[in-house]
Length: 274
Ligand code: ATR
Image (cartoon, rainbow, N blue to C red):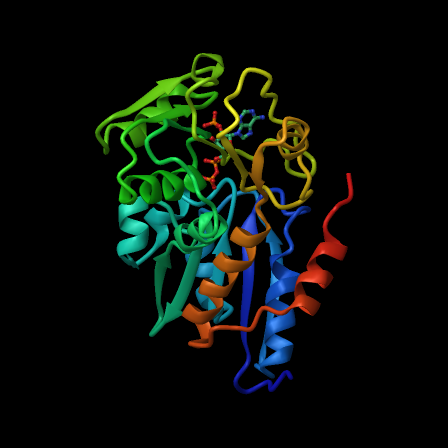
């Protein structure tokens, strides 16, 4: 319900954005709650002028995705505790002409694990060292996980996370941890629509291990298919996607939007079947 006088735009910045279902999901809720807004995909190649652009256009807020979750911070007027502790922002709110950053990935990630019985004494392997990995590591530390191994293409990016915590190791391959790991999490873009797959052999893994891929489009990534092949408990990125979006929506509108089966079916219909 667009009312020109009160209209405030929303959107998602990232590159690429082909895989994102955030515009669909937020516009669904905007319609449901009859809000004068519209959520736009904004695939952008650099963020140097982001503040001026969005202030000029009087945006209400934004989601931020790969590769800008960390890079955006220096453009903001302030960040809340969730963004400070993770050093990553996935949600912005423009209020009183100021841009404030939040991180709702932590809430989303936690939701995906909420009904799963995982052995917290076993090591946890985290693939990736970007903004999403920051949220995941923060959550794991809040659960008192003692042994975390980050596996990432670029060692220096992993080092930036490791130096802020105790007892996190870096490695470039996971074979050595196969028999021990209790939880294996993909936070990289690998497996996402338009990206190569994350190549991990699960043949030597212990049967207790849980595989969590935060990629939600496609839902059955190579990693999830592989987990199914070895009868491992697996968690797709769908719940995290919906829950982080729900938390962003409530930052913008102070409404906890409804999630029902009809909505989940509509999202699944839009997810790539690859
Ligand atoms: P953001 O901070 O917005 O989440 P990012 O910093 O680009 O985005 O993080 C993406 C993650 O996916 C990083 O861990 C990145 O690895 P690098 O630190 O080596 O860049 C990982 N990633 C993205 N594309 C990849 C690829 N083709 N192969 C391996 N890792 C990749």
